[in-house]
Image (cartoon, rainbow, N blue to C red; front, side, top):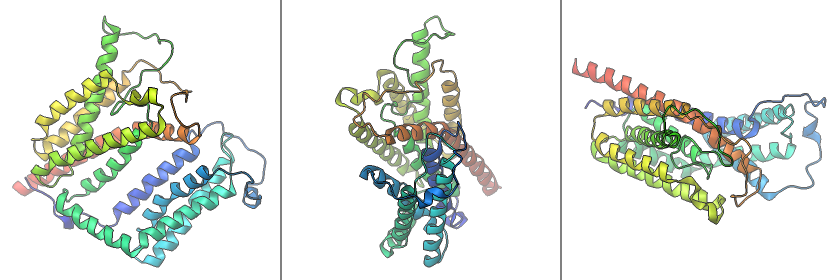
Length: 366
């Protein structure tokens, strides 16, 4: 199979993309949903000169610092000069936080805070300092060489690796099924029209089938990153084990003991087992075939999800959660938005990989 050379991978686009992902996460957590706009009639910049809040929670302060840490880290890597990277990260991270706080003044569910601005700017600065640390630079160079030694040397691989990082955001809600796309609402049964005589079978096919296709499509995209045929299975297995460990950790941290297994059910489990059986066969196929199957499976998953007749609970109860902080609402919201966006990005990336590899192989053979 023809492969792309490392020299064909453009430099500098990964920090931009990572910073864009961080900015999207910040926007979702800080502003979403963008509704019920209203003018509070106060001067726009007055909140900057308010006394610092008398009562603050340490948890909130730490979260506000950590939220901008990866953003500052990515911004600092964009310029080539180290001093310019630090200055660029501090200015952009602070400007982003200021913009968010200004927008929050028009959202009745949000409160603009000068303390949040200080914490966010501090987090961006710390992330930039960490990125420019000589040890971080050394680790980054080693990881760059390791990436080109073990992963497929193309731009699609860089995008896929970033997309895999984004995929873990879809698992932040501990009550959402593992690789699940649809969720059965709690409470009273909802009326719906079933195209099958057996409505329970109809729901089962959609829930299990969408989980199967989601698993297969996600892991096919993971397999496209492998440089050698022998490493595909190890890479897919490693990703699946890491995803399982993270889901277990999230469930253990957030869910009470009686609700620990809310992230899995027999219908999803059967779908995942069927997906693993398909993968045992499809992982042996060449790059182009796996990319094409990734497009088909992810497209099929989106189609099945659109057929789900039940409406999700918009006001979930936190009785099954250990914590009562508002940040849990933000985590669930972030997981929901990521779950809607991620399949379309993954499908697009599989399609790009299919087209690029097909064209490159045809030129190579010609």
